[in-house]
Structure formats: C-alpha cells, structure tokens
Image (cartoon, rainbow, N blue to C red; front, side, top):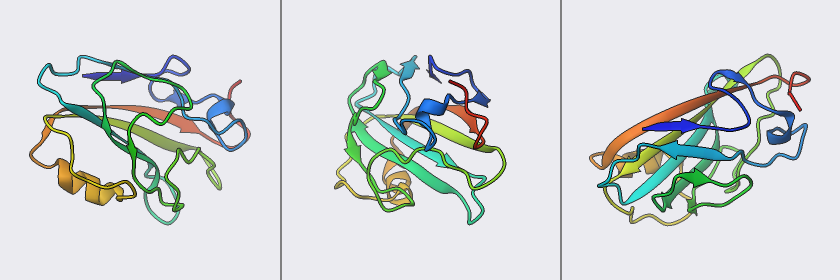
Length: 147
C-alpha cells in the first residue's frame, strides 16, 4: 500500500496552505494498493517532534475504501486531536523543522467506535485488524512553507 500527496513529495516541506500560516486545510491524499479484503481505512496524522511529546493532528476512522481523500474533507468518523478538537489540526511548530506523519491503515472491518476517541483508543481497536499500512512524511517549519 502507498500514500502520496500531489502537493509535496515524501520527506519534503509541505506547502504553506496546509499549515497555520496558510489556510490550515488538510491536504489531498492518494491511497494506492489497498488490499482487496479491506472494509475500511483509518488515518492518524502526528508530529513526533513536538516539545511535549507526540502531537496528534488528525484522527479519522471508518473511512470508506477509497483511492483519494479530498483536500479539506472529513472522510470518516473523527477522533480527538491533542488540541482537543476533532478536525484537522494544521502544522504550527513552535520552533525548528517538524515531521508530520500521515499514517494510513487498511482494516478488515468497520470499527465499533464512537467519534471523539483518541489515537491510542483507535490503535487499540485496530489491533488484529490491520491488513496493511503506509505512511507519508511532510516537513514544516514556520517561515519555510512553500506556496
């Protein structure tokens, strides 16, 4: 399985548009090679470089098996981010360059979870149901965003 973004290449700087210095919208994501037995997808976006520990920017589950997540969309049920919200929390690092991991999981089931779960609760519910996973890393540093 593979996840890509038309707006940036793996392990390169994300455009300004997807950060707190831009529109703060979620980027378009392309998902390829999803296993045929997949019943749903889940997505966790986090920043392991945050000063207080990993910062969770987006938690989405029970996404239909699709090949594209549209820009600025809500593709499934929403979990809670570190900031306490449920929608995409755009990159806004306090200092330095941070890495933003877009992790997509193909699952063999729909998850029996309510909206507002944490990434930890989602990861626990996914155990034993992950058919495949892929990740895309986008970098961001304030003042370094690309148009």
